[in-house]
Image (cartoon, rainbow, N blue to C red; front, side, top):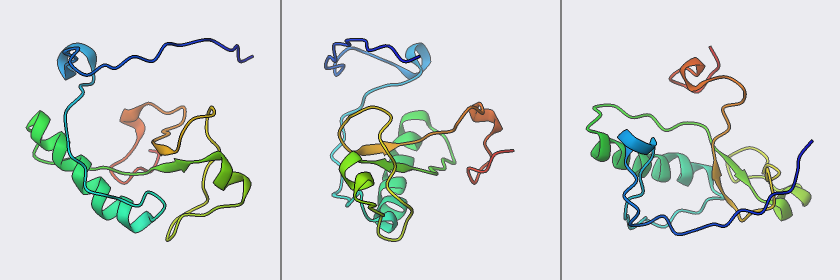
Length: 118
């Protein structure tokens, strides 16, 4: 059963997190404006920008961003849908709207290049 836990959120910028040591890093980046309620903008603009950041940071020759959910309680309660996309999802916990990737119970290695389970 879920148990409420208080968590203090801190600013991690400048903490020196690295991909090699921590599995993630925080980078400064000026984002182009994207309407996160417009599926075409997310897929064509936001994905491309994310892919470029990962390529630049890792030196990878190919990066593929795929699959996202927009979670927003008020829009879900109102039956909201994304323009050009699917229904708005219920937040996992009450939190502001943001993009989220849910790969389910399958480990990442079991997700194919198009995001389909293999």
